[in-house]
Image 1: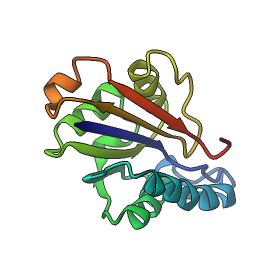
Image 2 (image 1 turned 180 degrees about the horizontal axis):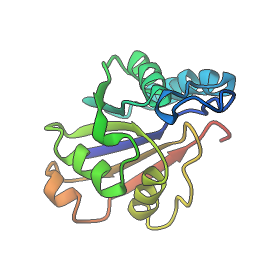
Image 3 (image 1 turned 180 degrees about the vertical axis):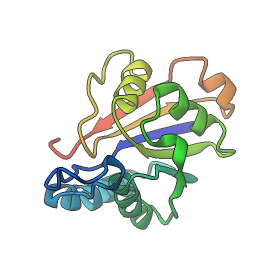
Image 4 (image 1 turned 90 degrees about the vertical axis):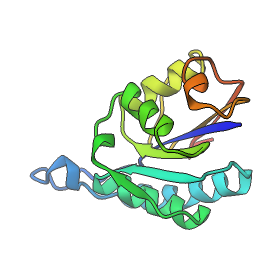
Length: 157
């Protein structure tokens, strides 16, 4: 079985207009949502062998919450900051494991989730979690076909 879990970073703080986008922290809602959503994912039993995250502060902080809940140390990847759907999928396929969680940004997250869900996921709000599973254990096959199943959760669910 191959599993890809996509997590859009939690809500970020726009209170410092001069702050570089890469350095924006989570706001209060994001600080609440990230651990709560991480606990919900952990309780679901979804496997996660590797946790990959964008280097942006808001993604790193979100990934840390998920890592704590799942017992995984986030691996920070520069290429995941502002990544396209293709780059996100390639990162998962190149991970060397069968179950990957990626914490990154829109629009790439929504584009990939929409594509893999056959249009069932039209938008990945902040801290949303979308999980896709394939019955194959080969990423080359998984990335070429539709997933067998998918699920979606968000803080407002």
